Image 1 (cartoon, rainbow, N blue to C red):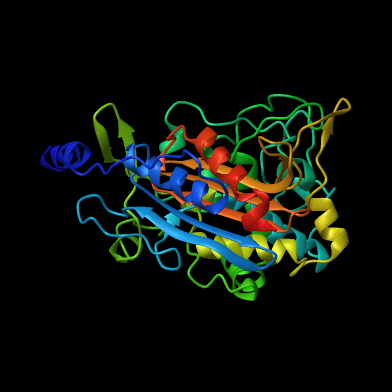
Image 2: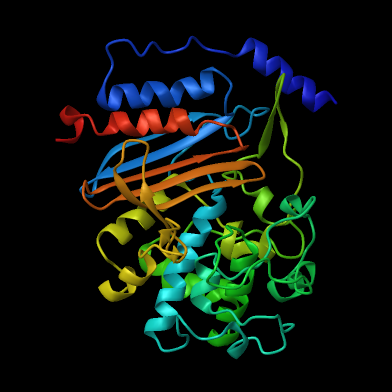
Length: 365
């Protein structure tokens, strides 16, 4: 209770004056919008990194990684949960496995995990990676599980449930698709999923601070790192500590932790076509269709348009104690990485406003 009232006191006594957006444009307006999200107590903290044509044009921390300690945010060191941006990392690893001949896009999942309970219909690796396999989503409190499950252990949560539609005939975004995908990748690669990702994706890109939650005990290691943000949930009177969760089992779909700087590196590597062949990227970035209608989702990547119609690939993520954006704009050669330490803060309209200001002709010409 004392911790809660400390947040309450912070809420009422620490607010700074809101930045006026009048006559602002470009980077100045974006910076002001990001700052206002903290000033208006919409998020406890935020880390932002923006690249334009490979040059860093904005990199700044806003607010605090810990409200109690009032720790400032360092874009290169402060570690946040990245939520569903994890799917992009998994997509790249899947692409590498296909290039190495370890997996095939359209092979049955059962070829890699033959002991998974048989369903009415078969489903493929491509269908798992594109959310068209018919696997169900979260039920009840599954979004916030705090169990020390390994990837294979965790499938008991949903493995006996029927498919919700015939694979290829529907679209249902969920993280259990990526639990199964990572299990198949683990079996195909004959090594733990996280080891393959580190070796084939993170290290080559230079994402050396990107990490995983502890498998056995979330209190060991990770939370003792001074650079790891604390995770919060917004209430009507301020912020409280988010419930404890263990996201190891859904690492592929929403479990990784990183810095905004390293997520921007990920985006830049994608922009420059590093790591994978062009034809592999083409597979990842081709939106799937259901009955002739686009899902705006490729394989681990949202493939869509922003609020102003600009084409991007990347991901928006929401997790316990986290909300995140990764937008990679191929035509404009822009990468936007935004990480926050708050569950579902309802700020996407504000972020869209800030992102749009980045494209004003003066700062980005």
